[in-house]
Image 1: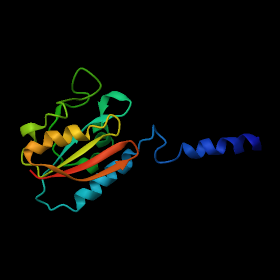
Image 2: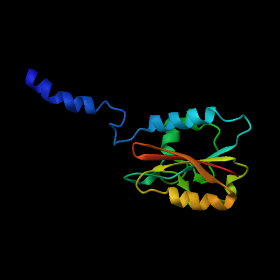
Image 3: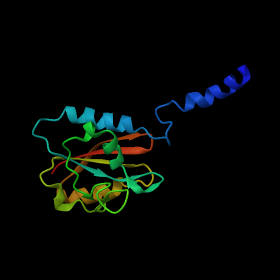
Image 4: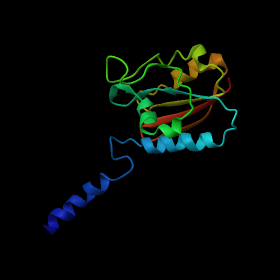
Length: 152
């Protein structure tokens, strides 16, 4: 019995780490966005673009905002067409990441939350450049990129 407990200890410990669920750290992504937004002036208008989730072909990183809504409260979601559960399928529908266009409205900051694979940072950067946005900060947390663009 003692041998079984000893042999299972490394596995039990690994299952309780922050990234144990599919090497994700959604709580850390949400905490980062929330912490960064706290330092913004009250007049700030933020938008968020959600890219894919690694190894989940139909899901977007919007699932992080659905899991931790307080961190994303008040952010415009210019790509969203139909929220999850409101359409014919399980997942939301959204415009392609390369098409934020005029839907950004009067945003002064845009956040990108996307997987590390596929890495859509270049697509988002190219799509935001004509609207006057430039990348100012980025963080890699487990298998997720969080990128801040300022401008507008």
